[in-house]
Image 1 (cartoon, helix red, strand yellow):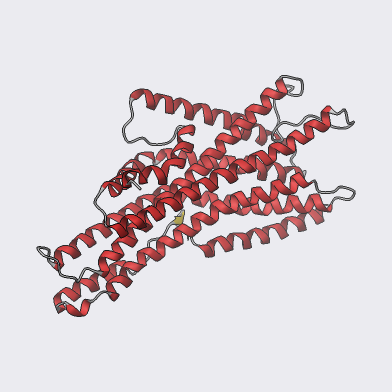
Image 2: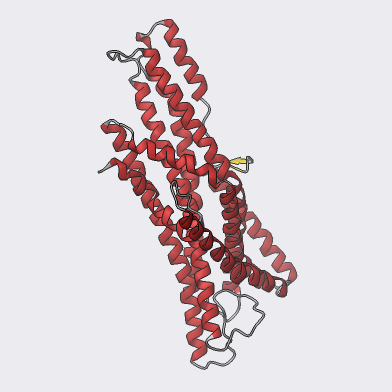
Length: 401
């Protein structure tokens, strides 16, 4: 494989997603491209905010007191898409900081590499692409499962069954009568397009984070391999020179990780709070539907809820996994310094390795708003908290009824 294409392979899908939304930072762009990107961004956010968040929030206040309806409105679209809009604004605030990171990654791909280093980088690039594809596909499936539910309801309405009313793509309030054709179809399509745009942004931001993390993990792995062989003598290069390169490279990777953490920590704080609420409310909505007398649970609703929870859970799991992998890879530098053949060195040179061990013993962590560290244990804790909140909601429902 051509190493120069590695960057495109790792970041290609997330670049497409974020370019559609107009927020991908191009390294070299003309004024025309920047104007087109700004137009796409403004148009996308306008459609999403007006036809999803605004109309659903108004509907939420109209249905205030109806716990079932409020749960459906909040958890299905209003909360997750609102979070996506929030994360988009946070990303735009830090957008300029991403440009040097992407330039750093491109430089890594274009620099000289050994066969093992290139293989390691390609392994992480392939993993990043597969994860990006998974995020896109599961997002697309989730939206279209909900589309199938609405199409089924529309077909029953068109068959002339009594007591049925036309429903928009999401339960919303519009300041006009949306039921007659073609107003209904236009409103329906606009809401569908807004949802797909939000899905592109949601999956694209996650894919970007994963691609950056996996590239960083690959670079730490390459640095670890160099540290294993740092004591081997090479013509014209002293031990201090080889170790000096490793120290400077480690500091560059550390700075890279700090910039990524600064960009995403506020997004992830909102995300873990949102995921906890969404898992709780989807479980509540499912139990509420299944407990209603004389009402079976439609198979399409079951499919949608399963896919929807899988969509949210998969994105969160992937981020927790790569964040924990980064912790392991960063700590492995200290382990490599300990396991190299330091006993062939002079006491003075051994002291240099001790300094590296002391520097690298603390893992590099991705946090959610500086409050908690992203890891698989956090992922399990989110589900645990959701279960507790679900029990509280069920108790409230029983008390009200």
